[in-house]
Image (cartoon, rainbow, N blue to C red):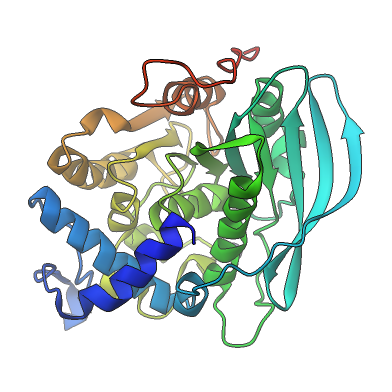
Length: 347
Ligand SMILES: [Zn+2]
């Protein structure tokens, strides 16, 4: 059984009576929102808060049955095509997401060097496909291609759909589950060092990176670009696919990001974002709230924020530096891992 799955099933049994989260926010209209807002507490209490919030979110996402399953649904991977590129192999594949649903993925594997390698789940935004992070310079700086060339395994699937595939599921739950299945697949590969898995994306991809880093503890490093904001801001001028019943009553985005602590998290927002979108000023306010839990875990250095000079886009240099710092070498060992440290890619 995988660590995240195991943790989830323990939580299911354990947290029925945990009540640390008293003290949410009351807003206009006397509607009570954000009942599980994070406030500073001991590390033990912070872990209980994370487990409880994860469990409640899994239920709202209609994923709790999938995550708490005793046995992993077999992936049955199938390679549809493979193309040898200069420094990596680009494979078109499909895997089982649920027992009744298969998804198409892209997997890249480094060539001309020895693994196991660090790996990154790469996630595109609205209108994106599983190819976008490899091909699109606009917004994405082809960051998946850059990481693949630098010696990372990368994996991608589409999350831009706006309809559920299976009855009884939620849109965000299906998107997140497909990404978690990508992590399942990575951990099944002998080429991947399962202690060095990260994720990153821009816009809706940054939002899904937030969710994946928050809900799947196998992810050690998350880059969430073009998304850090507050839910009040998302109520206007945005596609409403971020919202699902019960979410606002429970948490704001800062709380969801706080589930990644003390694992590494980098948020990026562009200084050219219009005020109606994802401005740096609101991102900084949210970041102050996320800082609380990293301080409580005594790991403030694992949290980063970059206000870059662009607009609704990823900042490639800080993304590459971040993944090198947190995935480039095995942590807590004197020796580097069997693989060479990933090269610095061209800027
Ligand atoms: Zn949408």
